[in-house]
Amino acid sequence: MILIHTSIVKPRIIYVFRHFFYHRLGQEVSFTSDVSTFVAHSGPKMSYGDVPLGNEFFVAANGLLIEQGINPVDISVFEWEGMPAFFATSEKSQFPFDFFAASFYLMSRYEEYMPYTTDDLGGFKSEQSLAFKYNFLDLPLIDMWFNRFVAVWTNFFELPSFSQQINTAELVVEIPQLYAYKYKTLFRSFFEGLYDLGSLKFATTFDRLMVVLRFREDPLVGLIEQMEAFRSTTVSFRFFALYATLGVHDKSLSVFSKKHQQDLKSLSDYAPTAPLASFESTQKKQQLKQDIDRFSGLIHRPIKAIRQHKLVLRFPDTYRAYASLGIKHDYSMQYSDISGFRASTAHPFRFFDLGEEQETPLTIHPICLSESNIRAQQYARKMRQLFIVYKSRLKKLNAPMLVSLTNETFNNRSKNATFLATLKKLLIHE
Image (cartoon, rainbow, N blue to C red; front, side, top):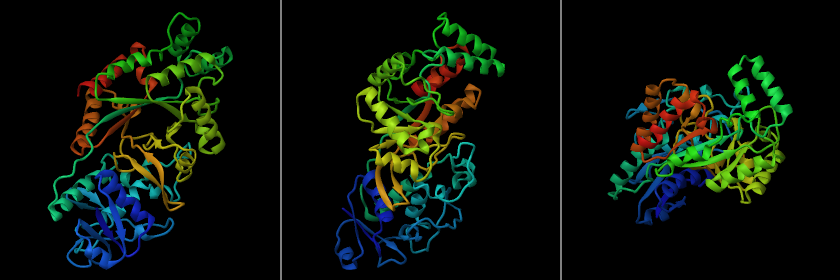
C-alpha cells in the first residue's frame, strides 16, 4: 500500500491521488495527516504539502487541492522536459510543478466552471481553453506527465516497472438519424425536400425522391454490414442513437414508428447501443430521464452509458444529471470543432463535481478524433497524417484511442466511397 501524507485530507486530494495510484497503477493508496504514522510506514510513501518532512519522496503542493469552491486561478505555463507545465513549485520537490493539482485542474474542467463566452449552441469554445491557448490541445499531456512521474517514482523506491493499460482503439458511432429518408412522414419528407431545393441541393432532392418512391435504398442502410469489417480486428465499437421527440437540433426519426423501433432494436442486439441524449435534455432534466427511460424500454436493458448530442456540456449540470440517473459511462468529452484532448488525457477518469466537492461514480471516456476532424483534411494523405500522429502518440503511452464517427461515415453513395475506403484502411490496416 502507498501512503500519502498531507496536512489536511480533502476530497480533491483523495480523488486525484486515487486516480493515478489506484485506477492507473492498480495500487492501494491511503492518506494520513499524522507524522508518526507516516514515519512508521514501511512501504512506498510520499508527502504532499508545503515542505518535506525529511528525505522522503516529496511533491510541493500548489494549494488548489485544499481549496473549497471555484476561484480565479493564476496560471503561468512554462516548458519542462519538452512538455508544457504549470503550477511551478520549489526546488525541494521531486517535480518542478504540482503535477497533481495541474492534472486536477485539467481533468475537472475547472476552467469550464468559470464565466466564458458561449458558442452558438451555448457550449464552451475550444479556443478559450488553456490547452488551445498554449498549443497542447493535441497532447494527452496528463498521460505524458504521468509517465514521467512513474519513472521518477519507481527509480526513487527501486520498484519494478508497473504494468500499464494496453493500447486499444474504439469507435464511437453516433446515430442522430438512423436513416436519411426512410420512415419519415410524407409531410416531413415534403418540407425537408423543399428546404433542400431552396438550398440548391438538387442531387439530395432527387436522391430523397428516389428513396421515397422506393427506386433506391436509403444511403444510410447497411450500417451493420459495414461494421462487419471490424469484427476480425482489435477495434471495438459502440453505437449511440438519438431516440427522442423532434426538435430544432434533434432530427431523430419518429419514436412512434414501429419500423424505426425494430431497426434500432436490431442494432442494439448487434453491438453495445445506448442513447444519444437529445439537445433539449441539456436544459431539461425531465427530458433526459424520458430519453433514457424510453431507450431502455426499447432495448429492454438498463442504460449505463450515454453521449450528448451536439456535445454541449454544461458543468457541473450535465454530468451531475447523468450520475443522478444511474449513468456510469459518458462518451461526450471532446470538442465539436477541433481534434484533441478536451481534458488533456486519453485515459478514462471519474467525474469530480466541483459544485458538490465530491467524486461521482460517472466515468468519462475522452475522445480525441471525430469524423468531421478527419473529413476536414480533404485529402487521403492528410487524413492519414492526422490519424497516425494521434495513433503513434497514444501507442507510446499505452493509452486508449477513441474515435467518434456518425452513421453518415458509412453512407453508401459513391461520393462517400473514397473517404470510407481511406478510413477503413486507417482503422483496420495501420
